[in-house]
View 1: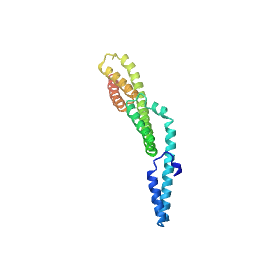
View 2 (view 1 turned 180 degrees about the vertical axis):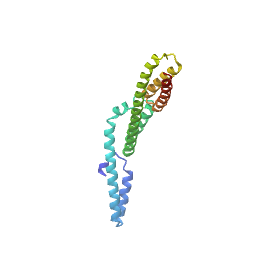
View 3 (view 1 turned 90 degrees about the horizontal axis):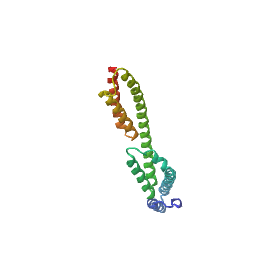
View 4 (view 1 turned 45 degrees about the horizontal axis):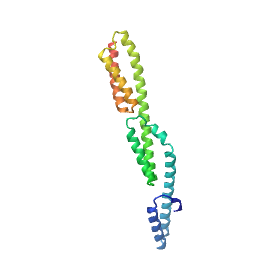
Length: 185
């Protein structure tokens, strides 16, 4: 129990008391099982504390991942909840939440990467088609052309703010409009 400096040890103290009672009653295997359980719990908590302390030194880097994002307040709130758990000594819970946070951030980054790839493709298609439209006499004042231009722009703006869902919707609209315009050329 000397390794538990600064941790809430009430549960472990109770388990240790139960182990001592079991030992006094002659149930050595029960006492040993409880003692082993305490050691496992303390070790797991120490490891979680160490991992969390390393992770918390990376807060700036973590915050940069959601900087300017549509849901930045939500991400920041999740980090604050994790920080509160660490202050309360709930290291294992904090580590679970931190793992989930980083996993969600990785999923968000992957989704944004996929959307960026689609956006790049649509922008290239649009650039090529725009030149063909100009050659065919379909100028910038054409309603479908303006709608397509706006849709591509909306997709880019949505992705820049981290709104992948809106970006994908705008990309779908853009693709549809590009196909319609392509048939007119």
